[in-house]
Length: 425
Image 1 (cartoon, rainbow, N blue to C red):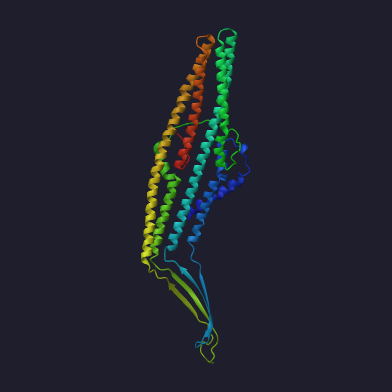
Image 2 (spheres, helix red, strand yellow):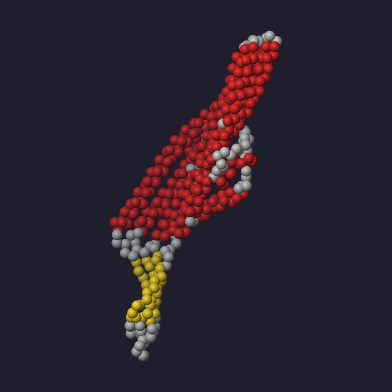
């Protein structure tokens, strides 16, 4: 029962958090923590899993309770004459006691099912967090992409001014000015396209937060990412130990084994104990010993478990269900490990891309752009070469932000699969 008490504490905490965070407004959300806290307390799907868990917990006290006592009453339409007097009515009460171990097996099955429901809630919470993180980092990428596009728009305006200056000084032709204006128009289009992506990007977050679809969320604060490696063996060990889907199946196996024990107990009878009382009037004849004395009887009864084929079928059914869940766990673990292997590769690949763009390509691209601008002003390269350098650097910056967002999204996916927060190292 200790495990059940521990699990039961969490829904209470969630309800308290919902009350404490219930007044938050979407226009105040800027950090990932804001989104996660609100989603945990307001997401309709997670609330449904929470209620299923609570409902499963309520099965435990029902399963370990004795059957209701049985009260019987009988009225003699015609009084029964006996030596000690006529009998008018009778009443009795009895209690059935299931065979030794039945209640324990039934309660254990209910407890393990409740713990499995708790793991389902935990899995739904991790999946929700992954969904929120995925949407948040996509939103963060978009915010950074808009900033980069605006910076490049200013850079192109500067290049247009340089081209105009050279054209005025007869050091460059009018085509350079026109090319600069064309690039400006293209960059303005890119910026507008990115800004229009805001609504469809936000809609994913709105769904996870149970906000109306048209809710407008503020741009998130851009966080610094510290992409570090993860050990694959450590990831696999954590997944096998803490993944809620696997843990839930473990509890379901335990519940199924308890049902096997319960099915075995069906071969034995239940015992009923009771007391009967009969109202008796005084005897007609005087001087009769015990005249008018009400008899009280102690009653014992058992059911007769005769239909043994049915009980055997019930036992085989419970054994088949246990084997089915055990095989389901093996299949689920294999599927999870395959997903983890792919996500782990994608996570590592994002780290390699981050290092490539951040440490090599962007510094070289900045150096190339500066050298190209100097050379263009000196008249040693044409304007197209300068624009190519700008385009290249823009692509590098956007690719770095894409790799950073991919890295955080893949880490969130790995955390969902592992069932725990992963400390990159």
